[in-house]
Length: 279
Picture 1: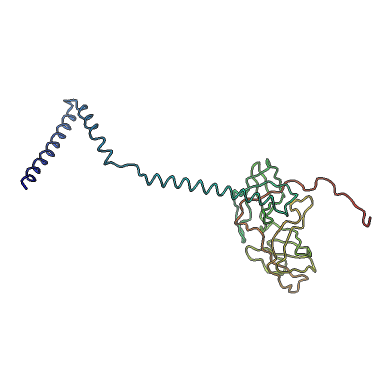
Picture 2 (picture 1 turned 180 degrees about the vertical axis):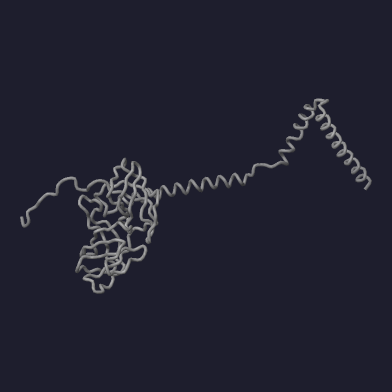
């Protein structure tokens, strides 16, 4: 008990002495009568380590979190590039696209949407890549649309289902001729968002599950023959019309477009040879 009583006054005296010394140094510094820089230098040398020890330190956990975020972002970018490369390979290996010259592209812009979703997209290829207007745009799943405007490095594509796109088609194993568009034939119900209206030629019979493919265009412009357009998912009642129409679900969903292929040039560079029937 006696020692504790002696230590407390001694500690108070030390604290009081330090306070008096600090006040004296401040007073001399402010008055300018005495150069206190040596004293300040000694104080900085003595107190600097203490300040660093008790002051704020760089948060190691924050550094680790930042590094983890950077690595996660880099991994996601790498995975996206690999997925795009796989889709490009799948595009070039698609049987229905064999013989076509394609340039792979990615969607980099989306235009206004209609009742069924976006009607236009912008791709990162253009005239310097050999792209021309009125050329088909495809994926491994089927037809996307046609090129309607071309710049040096980009192009705009009007998507299947847009109000200005009508495609001549063949339907089912019999190859029934018809036309697919976003507008229903006269007297037929309007297609629901995300579907297309199919108007077969007079007398053409449709069946649910029939595959719908492009009829083809001269010089493959805009649409080569045999591209998958979609599948017949419903057949309408004729209701006094010569032929019942149908509903087609497109093979390609516009909202998920990423890697696509733009058809370049013509597939047939030489005149088609003639032949004599029965020869």
